[in-house]
Picture (cartoon, rainbow over the protein chains, first blue to last red):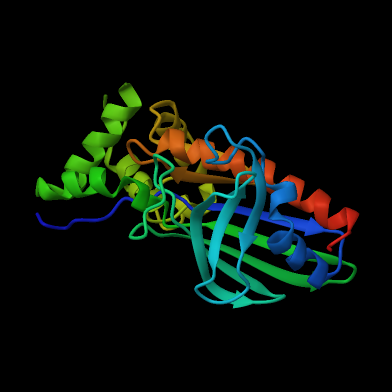
Amino acid sequence: MTAHQTVKPAPIRRRLEVKAPLERTFDTFVKRMHDWWPKEHSLIDGDSRKDVIIEPRPRGRWFEVTEKGKEIDWGHVRSWERPNRLLLVWQLTMEFKFDPDFETEVEVKFTPDGDVTIVEFEHRDLERFGDKAVETAAMMDDGWGQILGEFVKSAEA
Amino acid sequence: MDALGDPTRRAIFERIAGKPMTVGEAAAGLPVSRPAVSQHLKVLKDAGLVSDRAEGTRRIYSIDPAGLGPLRAWLDQHWDKALSAFQAAAEEGDTE
């Protein structure tokens, strides 16, 4: 009766074939994030975004910089393996607030294949966004029953 | 609401909760036909308990825990948009 099982949402996965060499593909991801990251997906609050920085080393910061020079943290680098792999930690909560204790992983793998680079992307640990909901259900000591109850409620809402 | 009332359907749901999978994977080892599994998946999907998406020629089923649906949908479209812009930027070159 205490067979708790955590409900895990599926990670977000994407696979791209980029018609560009390996190093350039990796560098575009890291150094030109400001160019390709959707402009409206920023936390600049009235200001405008000047840059997005990923410091090229383990524990390096991942943040955006506004025109007025304000720095807003998004997360950090967990593993820096240029040009084959990058492991970032996304630390923005469901409310899009930076929280140093909140971590979800964003892994990007780069593999050369002829004249293209295969990019495999995964944003995982998404269940952590909903830790509180899952904790609440688990505390009720009915494992699946309660958790599924939550599903049903949301499905019917 | 009895989408999970049927034992086979519940078993299928619990498998998908463990990890996202195709109909074939969800059906493996169960004493029911694949069309029957597809039918169960349809009921789960109609109930909003399971969602599916195309990955190449395959269809992948996954679950969506309470409260995370809208956030996951936001992230999904965010990464779609961001990664296609990233791809275009990489292909046009000009790294510096």
